[in-house]
Every structure is written in C-alpha cells, then in structure tokens.
Image 1: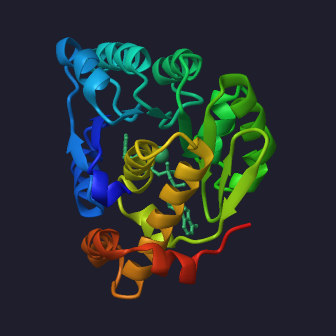
Image 2: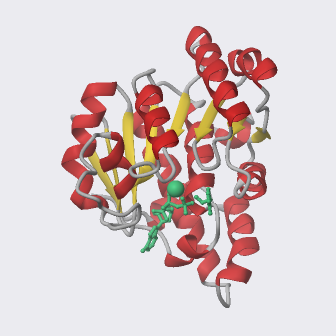
Length: 252
Ligand SMILES: Nc1ncnc2c1ncn2[C@@H]1O[C@H](COP(=O)(O)OP(=O)(O)OP(=O)(O)O)[C@@H](O)[C@H]1O
Ligand SMILES: Cc1ncsc1CCO
Ligand SMILES: [Mg+2]
C-alpha cells in the first residue's frame, strides 16, 4: 500500500538524520518533504499524507514549525508521529514532548528511556540511554497509550508496540541499525508513511516496524559493518515485500 499510494510524508526532524530519513522514505516508495518553516508547516501538514515531529535538534524555529504543523495536521486529520529524541534530562525538549504528547499524536515512537520519560516515569536521574530494554517499558507504554490515545512504539532488540489494549512484539532487527545515525529517526518517518495507508494505527505501526527491521536483517547479510550497512539498508527497503515479511516475521 505504501508503494502504490506514494504517501507524502512531511518531516520536521533533526539536522543529523534529515538525509537518512529522506532516503529511507524514497527507498520505500514514499515521498519525503522536509517542510520545517513555521510559515509553511501548518498548511503543508493539512495537505500531507503523514507528518513526523522529531525532537532531535529542536531549535526555536523548528519548535514553532512543530506547533504549526500539529495544528494543521489535527485540523485536517493528517496522521502524525512524535519522536521524543533524548527527552528526560534535557529541559527544552522534555517540556516540548509533554505538550506535544498531549496534543493527540497518532503514534509516539521512541526507545525505552524516551518512552519512560514522556510517560513521566523516567525519574531518578536515569540517563537518556540507560536502558535499551523495550520490555521494561511495556506497561508504562500501555498506560501512555491509554492516556494519550496514541499507539506507542518502543524500539530496542525487541520492539514493543501497544495501543493500551493489545500489545505486539517484533523480534526482527539488527544491531547495525543502532550504529547508523538516524536509525531510530528514520523509523519514525516510516511509521508516518504506513499510517497514511489506513486507519488501523496498531496494524500500520506493526507493519512499519516489521518492514524496517526485516529490511535491516536483509541488509546485514550483505554488509561488512555499519558503513556498508547503510546503503545496503536502503537497497533492502526498496525490495522487501509481503512474501519476505511472511517468511521472516518474528512476532509475539
Ligand atoms: N540491539 C538491537 N538489535 C537489533 N535491532 C535493534 C537493536 N536495538 C535497536 N534495534 C532496532 O533499531 C531500530 C531503531 O531503534 P533504536 O532503539 O536504536 O532507536 P533510537 O534509540 O531512537 O535511535 P536514534 O539513535 O536514531 O535516536 C529499531 O527498528 C529497532 O528494532
Ligand atoms: C546524534 C543526534 N543528536 C541529536 S539528534 C541525533 C540523531 C540521532 O537521534
Ligand atoms: Mg531516537
């Protein structure tokens, strides 16, 4: 459905991951648009198929663009994904994530530390990357889903995806994804692309994570390390299909 509909995905994302994210969407068959000016972001979000709001390098202009884009997406019913990068101890993005997670995102996507922090459970001086165990955040993620109405996708060696009622675990993936910058950030954009294909947010998010992590496995078979993994991953995103997913999926 992503390939046949070519969803237009607006990304307000960080300056590190912008190129990786655009290339991942193109490889998958979606259309990226990094429209991140405050004066343009709201109108564009109303017309886009999906929106990513990623807090990785949230300068003042980006923050204004995020507010405008969320308002435009909300008014038009455009699905949007919040990636609360490195929230927890950094004050500006942590406050921003609290506001945005209450603004009705369709999906909140982060690693375990970030999801715990957005849920207000990341206390106690826990470092931003102190845990990569998504399972440890599963209950908190489900509570966050119920409170916000969002599907919550926690990434890690096993990804946990929940709408607060049903929870799906995706065991696919490869550690090279964590050694390529933007490995999590591009996943947020891919989740937005899949959200544009239909109203079932849990199903579209599981499909996005499964596609992404199976592509990583295909790429790892051809890669000598994280450097050659990155282009192999784009190649794999462009060929992975339903038959490969059926053969490779490790869901629980
Ligand atoms: N140890 C691991 N083994 C296999 N796959 C992993 C592992 N850790 C993460 N992944 C996969 O990597 C992808 C990105 O998840 P990760 O948890 O690294 O995001 P992140 O911490 O937000 O990344 P970023 O550095 O871009 O912010 C997900 O698809 C996840 O399945
Ligand atoms: C390295 C880095 N720093 C801020 S955002 C980002 C991309 C990975 O999250
Ligand atoms: Mg991240």
